[in-house]
Image 1 (cartoon, rainbow, N blue to C red):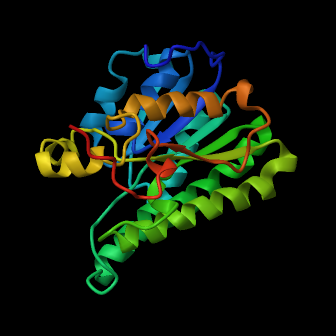
Image 2: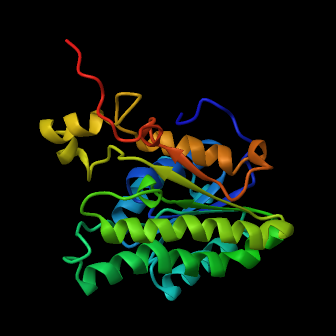
Length: 261
């Protein structure tokens, strides 16, 4: 089980975008383990089917599509409603990071990041909001601590994630009186299949470790546990929050760890 706590998600329906790997996969499986019905959406069918392969067919489904486009978003929301009749939780996890300083960030890279990280999230929020009003549900964006400050060589990514954090706060204000809660999770560097090569680099790991109070990189399950809490009744009075799940990264002002030994 991903979570130590037990949540009452039986009868709850959840849409997770970017659910084929890493954080999205862990979140989808976390909700499924807790009894929810989950639809995972993304561009590649094989990893999406792998995410849900060990769960009952009547509670797990896949939609293949580009979550940066309106057609892809509409297809995912419509499919979930046709299957289960209601939408309770949306987890906007699809994302893209392309390195570059502001003077090397070309238009194609910027537009690709913006279309997935921000434009797609806006389309997903716009399409799902009426259904979430009906269910008095939850919208949860997977952002990043990169939206809380700057990184070297990540101008475009920082800009899109900063916009996501502000959007989440604005949505929380606009949808709150309708009973819809809107929050974001801001992970730090997370160990996944895509990032393992960097973690295996001793120089990179040494520099990263110097920023981590808990002395380890995040695992996707760390983010999934936060998602399960924020969408649960235990978080009923929490909205408009950007929650760092970062092992203490943002607790530091950047001063290196003291040298010992």
